[in-house]
Length: 233
Image (cartoon, rainbow, N blue to C red; front, side):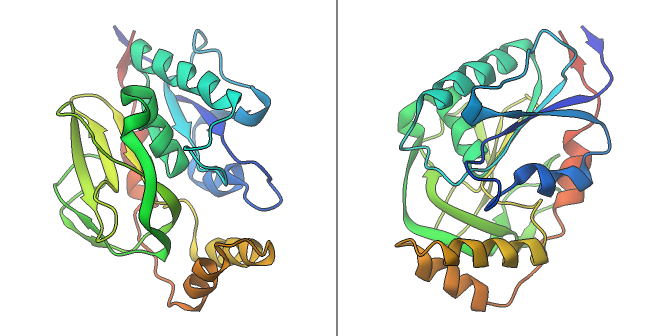
């Protein structure tokens, strides 16, 4: 075991970057060496290189409706877990991480989707999110993580989503349902883009855009806590 210099592999799960471009949202906060990989093109990192950290981004697609590239990514995530990498999954990436670790029973459609700035309760003081408190991060999700085993610790919840954040116990492996990397102005732009698509989910985006935006203040805490050097195989 040795401590390696931090190097991030960011797996971009977006479908149409003209609508949603997660690399642009994460870029301002990644003050370390990092490379990006486009999952929908089956472009994934070689984990035998010097990567120490893996970020799984959000996506416009659903974890319930899986194409072939999703299963390829699941294999990469499972390999990263085995190799001891630090892993952070956000929104779709949070759901994919749970799926990779526990299978399809760990994800389902939301009974009540969450779109906008959602009141989230940090349930336990933890390394990633900090002290117990309320926060109002930006969120867009129509699927959710459920049925975690005793190997996981639930870190945060909301009224309509019991597993807003989790950690694989004693491992630097976290899932967060929220989008802390999307600031208020970018969130409003994103909501307008989704509204312009005229999907059946349009009312959720319209309601969120009319709501009062709030900043969670979580992104710098999350990135700083996640990107610490750790011993790795």
